[in-house]
Image (cartoon, rainbow, N blue to C red):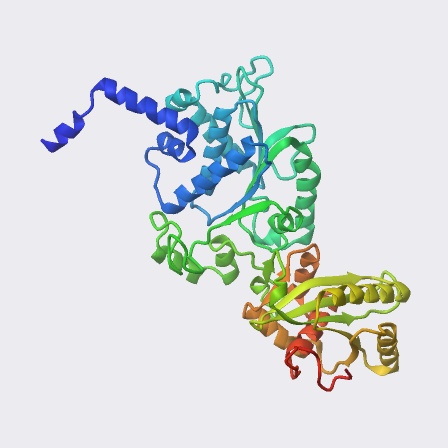
Length: 488
């Protein structure tokens, strides 16, 4: 009887009113739109949270703020579907928008196109957005197209176009750019040539299509710290990143450390099983959304922390350590690493000055760095690596003389580069080393990845020297000044 009462609670007129109210709400609320369009949608807290974030993205877009957003979530958790739903919702609200969707795979673009066409054709969508109408399938009506690579709208100038990364987009204009996995997998991500080629297409071709109001939305699995998202972080200060690891790395608002992101779809048992099967790099990239560079076994590259700001008030003392190269311009690199020891005994690198300079220019740059550094950091000292032999001694002593007025010392190194680097590498592996986000990060991490087999070793040598001077066997007075027997 109770079931009969529930079934007969509303009259047909009442049901019609409720449906119309739901459609009206779906026009304004993205999460409501998703539920109306997909009644069988599997719900979870993170789906609701991402919908709210995507609605904020849409609000900023329509307000002319040109938002840039990266959504990182494990594979097969529905992130692409959410973004495709967002595209259909935005084109319903404004069918004059021009959207370009790009991916490493033509198949992914065609699949997104097909899903959108099916959504546009549903009675629910036409009831929610009656002004967004399509031409006939596979035919042109005037200039209007509807095929597997292009969707245009009747009575509006907007469109959805799907292409591949590297595909021709010049001559097009877009208001919303969608990038869904720009690089296929770890093998391609490990190729600097492919990363460079992808980035050149993204910056020169894809971004060149952006209208004045255009927004950017990126979905990706990150296999490498120097992938397109890594480069976006360096070059786009207003980039917003939503990162959702499959297993929580710390206690969060909705889950405790170690709990799954979407247990309604991928439970803890499933994730732990795949964690055992996959390589560490594979699981970290695919499920944890943590770029993991595979290379040399000394430095655990994934443990470097990239920070946007230097905590200046937390600095105990600072070192700029120089590894000088030969005097030939265009030869080996000289590098000066500015490293700080913080009050919690972690290490922070805020600058790497590096170049292939002749002696005069190199010495000028070393002095300029000393002037800038000493004006910013109270407990600061310069070290210059002294290579073996009389030539190395004379070169180091010359640098000390050039830096008259600064606290400076030549450092005579002994032992292999690998042995000297081990204490620093251990702290990197423990997650105790941070880098200030800057354009030098890419080269620094690439060198560390393959050290000691890397072609150039100047940045790691200088970092090793700076770390050892900051942390090993030194004594300081209460003012944190350098006071013991190092020629000071």
